[in-house]
Amino acid sequence: MPRRPLVFTALGLALWGAFVAWSDWSGAEKLKQGGLEGRNGPLALVVTLNFAPEAFHLTRLQQAGRMLGVQGRTVRLADVSAADARALAREYWIGSVRRDVP
Amino acid sequence: MRRRAALTGVLGLIALLAAWQISVPLVGLEPYYYPSPHDVALAFWDLLRKGILPVDIADSLGRYGLGVATGTVLGVAMGLLIGLNRAVDRMLGPLINFLFAIVEVAWIPIFVIWWGYGLKTILVALSYVVFFPVLYNTILGVRMVPQVLVHAVRSLGAGPRQVITEVVLPAALPNIITGFRVGAGFAFRGLVFAEVIAAKTGVGYLIFAGASDHQTDRTIVGMVVMGAMWLLIDTMYLKPFERATVERWGQVTAAEMRE
Image (cartoon, rainbow over all chains, first blue to last red; front, side, top):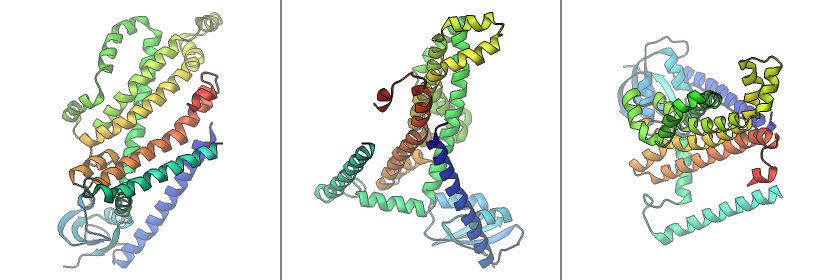
């Protein structure tokens, strides 16, 4: 078995594993800061991106919940499950995820 | 020697980028028509920080891997069947030659009608592209197996399954691997067409969407990423694999491999 593909694959898997671990940690921190730690769904969220959202981001957010509105870099979502909230928090392009208090 | 060749390549690339950057103010066109390397670099960083590029690359690689794997399995299976059985060859040969002439781009609109936009359509399209090079090379490899070997194992009591697994398949393997490498190359190009028509993510879609949205810098980012992805796949996987098999088995010399 040639060595180069094995080394390259191992390196790729290691980098991906490190990224996943960092995403899990940063996602947990965002949920804690947003008052969402340990909460069960369905949740109403205020998701703030690090930039104005594009079609890609709006599609991704709509997959997580019902979109109530977009204002600048902030998107309000309703009926988001706890699992989807955790998945959103793990995205590095999302700055914060907070509970939407009406 | 190899380090000098690599350094020459890098210097050539730097010279090309410098010439491109210098030409932009001289040409005097809007960035929409003629973005500079700096514009493209900024677009690359923008797509990366917004999470778009990693998803596009991951989706493209996933579709590519699945398509190549499926097309290879089908191509090898059909190639063995046709190569070993003249009746099947006479029955399917003309149909396969007919289908070979129809490029997968012509099939994609039909696939979209049958399976809609998404993974299924792209997978079928990529498998179609990989299938034919693998099929033809498998048939060639099977037909090149010296019959004296087949007769020898049969005289020792081997059944049809053993003849295939112990003689035919190992003997045809160099040709199968060559067909696989050709098919893998065609599939990469086919991926762009398939994603332009039938996907909402992927590097091919990025190229198309950039042009549609008047973001030519993003289109060029997609093209550069596409070239880099193929370079990585070929350098890290296909070439070493071929070197460890086809070259090692004496089918192709090292000098021919370097060409």
